[in-house]
Length: 619
Image (cartoon, rainbow, N blue to C red):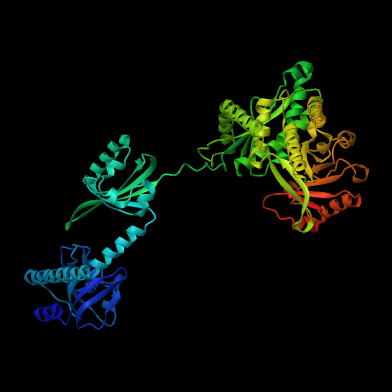
C-alpha cells in the first residue's frame, strides 16, 4: 500500500518499505524494483537509520561521496536520487526505512519532505498494530502450552524450587524440597520462606529481598535452612524476582544444598621437607672437622634428591641445612610415600657416613601449602614454601602424633596378594600398613619418634605380619606372609637389636611363615654387609629376598648369594629397555632365584611375565 502511494504522490518510479537484517536489506514491499534482498554494506537505508529522527535526502548520488561508488549508482540500476525516512519497530528501535528512489537527480522542498515523514509515521503505526495483533495471537495459542510445560518442568527439576510472594509466603514447591527439608508440599503451603531459614540468617535474607525490590536483579546468598525435624542444612539460595503487569510480583527461589568442601587439590601445592636430626653429639665428636663432614653429608643428600625427584619437582637447601621440596604434581598420599623413600635412602647414607652407633636420623614430612602465584620464579616460590613449612613444623608434629596414635591403637593393615603367571594367585600375601598411611607413618616416626621410640616402622611391619600369620594359623590356612624391611635396620645397631628381640619373642611357628624382603639397598653397600644381614635372617625366616629399585650397578653377584628371591620395583625401572630387563631377570633365573615385580597401580603384569618374571604384586 505505502509504496504505491509514495510513487503516485512524489511521481517517482521506485519506492519501498525496507527492513534491515544483520547482513542484508529485505524489501518488505516495493514498487518499480525487482530485487527482494540487497547486501547491507551497499544499502542507502542502512545509512538512513544512523539518524533515526531525520530523513536521509540524497539529491544526486553521483555527487555524494558516500554513495558515488555504490553498485546501485554505477551499475545497471543507475540510481541517482534517494529520500528515506527511518521506520521503527514497536520497541522504538529503527529497523528500516520508507524510501523513494529515481534514476535522475531530483530536488525536494520541506513540504514534500514533511509528507514523507508523515507517511513513515503511518508505517510505524501499522507495524505496531501488526505486532500487537501477532503477540496477542501467539500469547493466546501458547499460553496454555507454556503453563503446562512450566508446571511439568517445575515438578521434574532435580533442584529444590519454591515460588513465593514478595512477602515470603510459599505458593508452590516441588518434590526435591521435601527431600531437602522434610516437609511435604502441602505443609510448606502454610509457611513462609522465612520459617525455614535459621534465625541468625533471616536478617541478611530480608535485606537482600528489600534491595531486590528496588533493582529487580537476581541474587545469590549463602544461608542455613531449617528442616522439619529441626536439622540445619547449609544452602545457597538463588532468588529471581518476576514482575509482570498481569500478575502480582513473585519470587522463584532455587535451594542448593552446600556440600562439604572437597579436599583441596594438592598438585602444585605440596611442600616436603628433608631434615637431619640429632646431629649435636656428632658435631661435638668431630670438633673442627665437623664442617667438612657437614659439607659431605649435605652434598650426598642433595645428590640423592637430584636423582630421586622428577624433572618437574624443585628443591632448595634452607639456612638450617634442611631441604624444602616442591612437588608440582601427585596426591598427598603419593608424595608422602615418595619423600619417605628419599628419607630412607638419605638415612642409609647418614648411617654409612657416621657409623652404626649414631643416634642421628633423618626426618621427612609433607604439607599442603598454598601458592599465591604458581607462575612466579621457582626461587621465589621455594622461599615462600620454606617459610611456610617452617612455620607449620609444630602443626606437622601434632598431625604426626595423631597418625602414630591412630596406627598404634588401631593396628590397621592391608594384605596384597602375590600373583603367579597367568594371574593365578599364589598362597602368599604382602602385609603392610594401608597405602595412605605408609608414608605418613614413616614421616611421623621420623618427626616425633626418633631413635628412642619403642616402636619404629620396621617393628610395626613385623607386628602386623605376625598378626596376619596367627590369623592364618587359627583359620587353618597355610601361606607365606611377606614383609618389607629397610636395609637401614641392619646397619643401625639399636634398631637391629630391637627388631631381632621382637622376632625372638614370637612363637617359632609364626616366624617360620614370614618371608623377609629387604629394601632400600644402596648401590654402594658392601656385599659382606648385605650377606651378613641375610645370614642373620635365614635361620629364623621362611625365606629372605631383596627389593631393588636399581639394577646397575648390582651390589652382589646372583650366583654368590643365598637369596630366596629378588624383587624389582617397576616404578623406577619401568622406563628401561625390555632387552636390558630381560637379560637382568635371566641372570637370576639361571641362578635359580625367582623374580618378583612390584607393580604400580596403573601397570599390568603381562609385560613383566613376558620378560621372565615369576611373580607380581602391587607396590
